[in-house]
Length: 127
Image 1: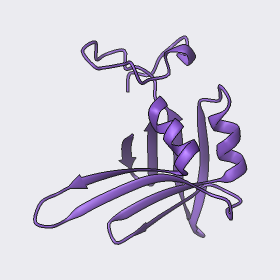
Image 2 (image 1 turned 90 degrees about the horizontal axis):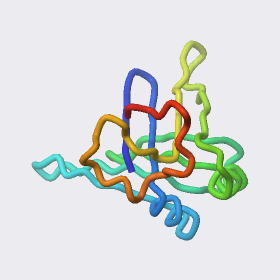
Image 3 (image 1 turned 180 degrees about the horizontal axis):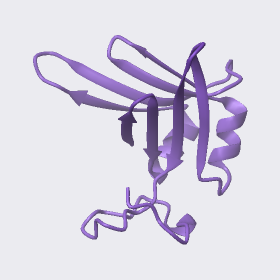
């Protein structure tokens, strides 16, 4: 799973095997050891109590959660991405984008065996 964060925007790209894990276990999680006993975790999960995609951060743990029905539709279709703007204040939103991972066109040495080759758009993303 890949995580990209820019000003008020979180983007997650998920590989085929991770999508399968998400469908079966309702959670895919990554851990980053930053040293000095600081661990950052991020996860994509499914929550059957939600009505919309939601992001939260607590104790160095970033969670993006999908409503069950939304997740099931996305997982079982050729739909590439899920996108929402989460309201965080009267004046601001947090852009959330969850995508199936495509092969990077500018990294020929990268292992592409677990990406969504069959869904590659006519103009692939350069990552």
